[in-house]
Image 1 (cartoon, rainbow, N blue to C red):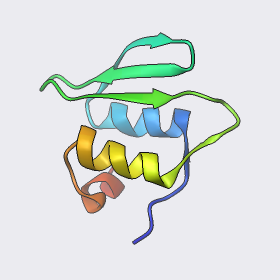
Image 2: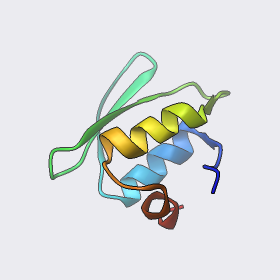
Image 3: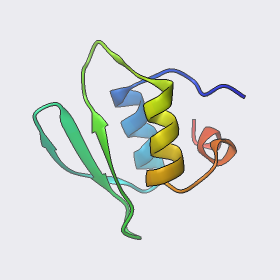
Image 4: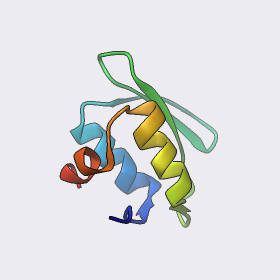
Length: 74
């Protein structure tokens, strides 16, 4: 299954559903942290979409879940 194309604010909302909180935003990067210690950084550009490669990296390496688990939160 292909990953959906998301904008930064949509991805941030999905991560908040998963329990992540916005820790800070510096320039065009938002830093989010989960209570269990997982962290991720999202590039925040209002008109641009998150590339599927970056989204895949966030899912696999930062969140340490698979695509099916991620799509349940969409």
